[in-house]
Amino acid sequence: MAATNLTGLVRDYLFDQRTRQDMQMTERAAEALVPDLEHLSAENLNETLRDYSDSMNGRLMILDPDGKVQFDTFGSLCGRRLALEEVLQVLTAGNADAYGMYTPGRETAESMSGEEGAEYVAYCARELRAGGRLLGTVLFVSRIQKMMDSLNAVQWQLVTVFIVIALAALVLALILSQVLTKPITDLSRAMRKMGKGDLSVRAPVRGSGEMKELAEAYNTMAAQLESLDKTRNQFVSNASHELKTPLATMKIMLETMMYQPDMPRELQQEFMEDMNHEINRLTGIITDLLTLTRTDAKNQEMKKEPVDMSALTEEILHLLKPAAGKRNQSLTGEVESGLVLLGDQSKLHQILYNLTDNAIKYTPDRGRIHVSLRQEGDDVVWRVRDNGVGIPEEDQDHVFERFYRVDKARSRETGGTGLGLSIVRQLVTMHGGEVTVESVPGEGSEFTVRLPRKGA
Ligand SMILES: Nc1ncnc2c1ncn2[C@@H]1O[C@H](COP(=O)(O)OP(=O)(O)OP(=O)(O)O)[C@@H](O)[C@H]1O
Ligand SMILES: [Mg+2]
Image (cartoon, rainbow, N blue to C red; front, side, top):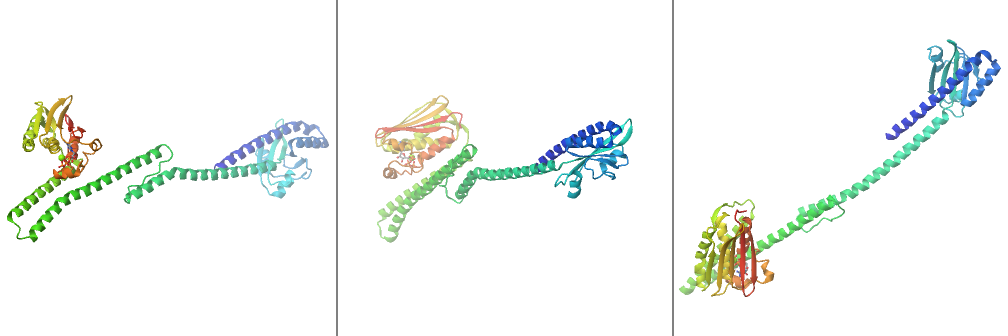
């Protein structure tokens, strides 16, 4: 398309150029010939005509007003009438000149122009006028075959060049699209695999720019999903294990009672009390699990009302005094009065209850537990300090994880499941605060809860 347009332009330009050139030459020859026509002899005129035709590189004829050839540099058409379109335009239509290009067939073209192998020929006619009288016309037969040949050659060259360029562009486009789409196909392959459940697949990170960013973002997401999946599996297996243990204990006791009908009454009573204890434990675990999953859900409703933190703290201290008293522990408080916080009363209650309950559980008899409530800047801060067993450095990061217990055997004894602190952390986060621990094994621990007064 572009090639034909371009060759069209070239052809038009060359034709134009040639037409103008031929017409100028013919006009000049005609002007020079007018005076000669009247003065020179036929012989001399023929010679002058030949001189002109040589310099113009073509055939020159002079026709009388009837269209009859009077002079011809080839000599062959003398005396013949030539009814060419251009001649007629000058002699009858009254035009000063006329020009036309033709492909009249090889024979005619060759005989007219005298050019070997010619197929194209151009005629240029120019009036011969002296003092308003039309004396006849000059007819110039121009040899344009060479021009046409080179034009054809140029045309073919252009077409070839364009085909080569188009092919090269096509190949380049194919290669480029391969290079560009490769990361995308890689990524979608990874996504499909992940969709089928394989969370370990990662997309290859290559190149630069957006594609690289996309692959990295995808990989981060995949890693997060994978770890989420792992935690969930762990949670389910931990939970079922925790639930199985009390059930197994109860089953053993129940079977013993079933197959020993003559068991002493007191032993039976003791078994039933143990079973009741296990049922309480099961209920506790399930309540904790429900709390966790419920606070997990983001759309969970949290009340946001003014909570009297000072009163709440006193209330919990009062509630847990008996438990501490049973173990001869001193449970003391240092409560700043009148501290109010925007939050959920029952959730705040559970936070401090769990922490104080832990302090009592993990502090030996006659130990000291101290709870404080203070305002620090815009925060309300709880500190629960004990001089109990403490938490080893390497476990401090993990105690807030679900089912995590430092000393599995001991805390099973004390009835712990490892859910208390993970509930604490979730509830504190819901209130926009944070919980931290500082502890030295053998010396004691201090848990700090920092809550913004205006709520989350
Ligand atoms: N004050 C503390 N002193 C020493 N160790 C503690 C203290 N508080 C928590 N821990 C350790 O952190 C672990 C996790 O505590 P968390 O309250 O989550 O679980 P738990 O007390 O074992 O069980 P649950 O609270 O669910 O009944 C405990 O098992 C214990 O090993
Ligand atoms: Mg606990």
